[in-house]
Image (cartoon, rainbow over all chains, first blue to last red; front, side):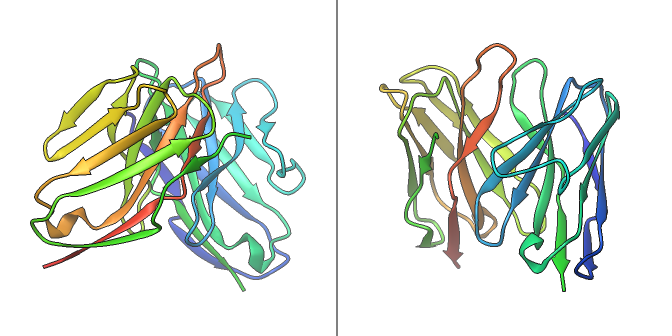
Length: 114
Length: 113
């Protein structure tokens, strides 16, 4: 299974500011995924980060609010822009095992916006 | 859109008891996955199921892929305190390059010593 490292593991941010979350994978992967997990809720896919092309966003998520970078096959960033308290969530990076298609997750970034 | 239903939201059992969790869907998946999430961690894959009717075990865990491809269950036998956590089911429909997962809302399991 892939080893996925996310930074930071947690942060407390002021409303109106932006936070960039980094995701590093120990092997090359075609697609990386960013999820949001609001308190007490399930995982909701924000977008798919593709290397060499723009990220694909799910309904309800837009690039201006959640810009994504994917400079190479092992790294991606998700930025949460102009934050409000409603953005307080756990943000998770995920990749698929190329052999099985199973999803593996980073440990998550717990964001609190005050 | 696709939705997965897991209920109840919380379960409380005594250490040593068995517990069963269901997951149902309004649509078909060709892969079912069960994940466990500990506090402060990302979900960890427990069991993956690929074929309708498939029954798979992983230690004290047993899961089955329903015949209709719209449901799955997870059994935990002889529960222990470290089984505490949130259990998510996820359905995956592999269509070409599309491998997105749909997650249930999760069941929080508490185990009383």
